[in-house]
Amino acid sequence: MTDLCALSDLNEGSSRGFLSHRGPVFAIKYDNEIYVYQNECPHLGVNLEFRENEFLDADGSLIQCSTHGALFAIDTGHCLAGPCQGDQLTALAFTIDAGRIILS
Image (cartoon, rainbow, N blue to C red):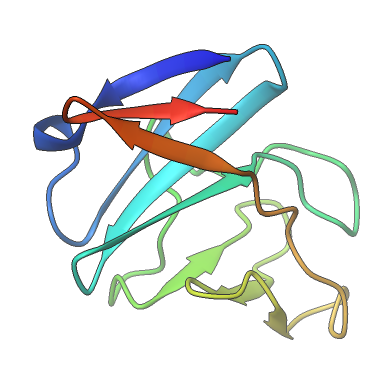
């Protein structure tokens, strides 16, 4: 288990990357829900972010791979556009305990 952060550290419409017992991961708060994914593009196996903690496209409505621009749905991790279309990000199980996001 890895304690990622406090819920209050993740603002609506934002993302944050973490190193965990599962390797690099990232969390997003979108529409008042939390999503946690492995930080790995299914196409090339590279990390997704443009800069530290920047995993979302310019509109903040999709996850975007910085290497080739693939776009993924925030709520499912499914690739909607790009060379990995039909693939998806690896969603990770987590719990919220005492106001903290804990990666299982």
